[in-house]
Structure formats: C-alpha cells, structure tokens
Length: 484
Image (cartoon, rainbow, N blue to C red):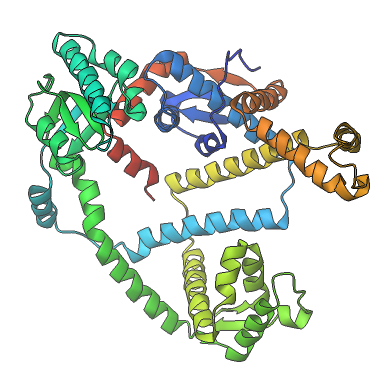
C-alpha cells in the first residue's frame, strides 16, 4: 500500500524525465512495486527544481517521484503500443546501441597520452572560488535616485554581513538574484573568466571565510559578496573530463575513417530514378497515398540490404511541418546526401548487431527511463484531454448565455468556435499548479492500491550530501548527467 505522502507539489511535466528504475540497495530511497528511486535521482531532481537542502524538501521530492512512478506504471498497464510507438522505442534503443558500438569498437583505440593530459591541466586549470552574494538590482540607465537607493540598501546589507549576520539568511530574504537566493546566495564554484570583471576581482582577492569589505558594482547592480572557499581541483579529479575533451577530435577522425571504409566495403549504390520518384511524392505533400509498387522501391542498396521508399516516407511523415518543408526543398544531390547519413547509421547498426553488441548498464538504464517517460507522458496527456472535453450541452448553454453577442449567427455556425473557447479556458485552468497537483495525486492514488510503496527516510541524509555537492559544483554534475 502507498504511505501517506502529505502535500505533494507537482512541478510540471519536466519531472517525468527523472522517473527511473534500478540502483544498488544502499542507494534506494523509495521502492514502487519493482521500480526504485535512488539517492542520485532525488538529488538531481531537487537540483533541477530549485529545492532547498533540508529533509522536508527531500520528502517532498521523494513524494513527487513516487507519484510519477505510479503514473508510469498505470500507463504501462493500460496503454497499448501502436506501430508508431513501437517504432519510437526501437529508435531509442538503436541510438543507444549506436553510441555503445562507437565506444566499444570505433573509439576503442583512441588513447590520449598521459603527459598530454597533465600538460593541458597545468596550462588551463587554475584557482576556483566558492562564493555567495546578495544582489540589489539597479540598471545603469536608472535615475540617480533609484541607483542611490539601491546602493544604500546594499551598504546596509554589507554592514549586517560584516557584523556577523547569517549571510545565507540575508541572501534568501533580500537578494534580487532569485536563482541563487533560494540557495542562500550560493554561486557554487567558479574559475576566472566566468564572472564579470569587478565581481571576479573582488572574489579572487578576498580570503576564504571573509566578506568583501566594499559593495561591488556591476552592470547588474550592487553585490555584497562572501567568499566561502578557494581551491585548485586535483588532476585525478579532472582527468576524465580532460581526456574527453582532448580525445573528441581524434574520435571524430576515427569515426569518419571507419565509416568511409565501411561504406566502401558495403558497396552502397543510390538509385537516382527512384530517388526522383521520392522527391516527386514529397512535392505532393505528406498526405499522398503510396501505391504498393512505390512503397517497395529501393532508394539505395548495400551488401546485405536496401533502403526502401516506404521507410523514408514513414520518417518524412513523422517530422514536424517545418522539417517536412526543409526536406521538400532538397534536390537529388541533397536527398542523396541525407540518405547517405541514414545509410551510414543503418550499416553501423547492422555491424553492431552482427557483433552482438550489448548495452552497458548505464545505457540500458537510460532506455528503461525513456520507456518510463513515454508511459507517464501518454497517460497524463490522455487524462488532461478528458478534463478539457466539452459536452454539447455546455456549448449550447454558453451560446444561450451570450445570445446578445451571437444574435446574428445561428448556433450550428458558431458551435465549433464556442467549443474551442471553452476548451481553451479549461486548458488554462488545467495548467495551473493546483490543477496539475490534483491530477497527478488523483492518478497516483488510484494506482497505489495495487502497488506496494516503501520509502527509506534514513537515507535522506545521503540525498542532502549529494545535493550539496551538486550545488557547490553544478558544472561537474551537469556534465555527468548528460554523459553517454
């Protein structure tokens, strides 16, 4: 059974992207049926949503992720996969498999010399500062009286900070930089060149634990600054990031060489007359119905397979209108170039499957997460659509209540317009935080009766430790979250 989670704030559909599964037992903060929510996932969500670093906020974040997992499970149980859905999931897996093959085969021999890594570190890695600030905004073009008042407020806050007042508390209450204010004014770690010159000069010129003795003026306004700490990150900590950066050009060269050899060995041939048929069909628009013979036309052949017109047509029709327009503007040479890129990917995937390449644990988890996201998004969209449905009787009532406005137009003529007005009104209401919270909680509660939910509050302190590390060094955690 699902525990009483208290007030569960719904922070928007972006939360769906953080529903996840798996994880070692010691990292598990909550279990929802067979799914798990980990320390890393909760901390990442809290960082992205601007939560404070305290246990109550951890509980709120865990409740939200539990709700989203319940909704995802409900979607998996009730929704049927369409052919388009299956194609999308297959595309996701293929992309991850493609990336895995590049790591395991194409990039395997690319190694950056250790001496080169250390040389780059010595030349490019310098001192970093961790600081907090309080901003009192004042635009440079503001009247002198406005700027004088802002400066006076900043001076007053500086005196409080120099007198020993809690700097984080002052920032939360008074700073106009809302992003850092909710973190007690924390800007995390930054190196030279990241801040505007007056701010940088003051921060790097002040000792750790000290408040800059003067208000610092920049184009953003007036700053009160406290330096928390200074460091130079050790080589071993940065080694992976440096290697990734230095290896990237060599990896791209290796991939181009590998693909060129593979395409030559695969004896790729483009059938220009059939490509002209594709271009003519695209000119007629995405609603054009293909004949069986057109569907089977090969656009390109290679050793072991071919690209048929039907495959490209399906991809074309799935594109947004703006992208369809771009495809429609291609001549034969441009279409061959586009097809060549698809052929490269196809042949690489065939090679990966031949080698029986398997997704590693990280990429398998990424795939599992995307599937979770798919189900959650689909069922939320379906539920929202039901909420904004408008009955015929409601349309008629609206028409009668606004008879003066519609006196010269018959009901049958304006019925679609009125329905659209009412749907728009309901959509606006449905998108408020309270409505989203209500919808999410109702859907989660309806699923909770059938799913065992367990949370582990004794592990919340690990979430807070992870979150504080992320807030102090947001660049490194952002790079880690997007790797692979």
